[in-house]
Image (cartoon, rainbow, N blue to C red; front, side, top):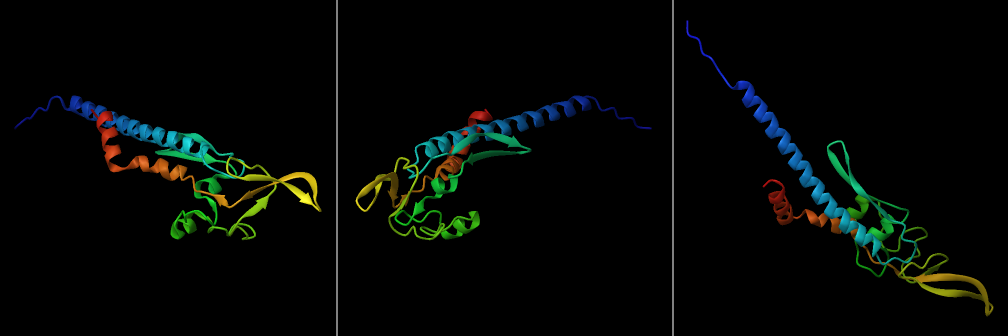
Length: 177
């Protein structure tokens, strides 16, 4: 009878398990670094956005949800700031993307009267023009904001551009060295 003895099998299994764990840790590190860069870009773009109104957007640091890392922007005006409003700015997002995210076309929100200059009572933000309300020549003490809309900030879109092939390769080389 022929007897074969295999040695070192347990060591090989343990080495492979360590290699898999190391690889998983490196992939997580790569994702976290890219998401931190996206977070930094989105935070700055939302904070600096030109907006005729109250910019209430808060970008939350990316978090893991299961095996997915999520970057969120919260606030009542996220869509208005990200995609823009009014009729004088470029058409972003494109109609197909606009339908996918539920955004409306330029000047089509609410009563659909945003096709030119319009006024509202509220916060002028950093883009609106404030003027007093007058009735029969008398100042009514309130002010309205005149605006033609807001250009798209594209904050989340710009954050996603971090994920171009060359940049991912450069960060991956650093992480996996």
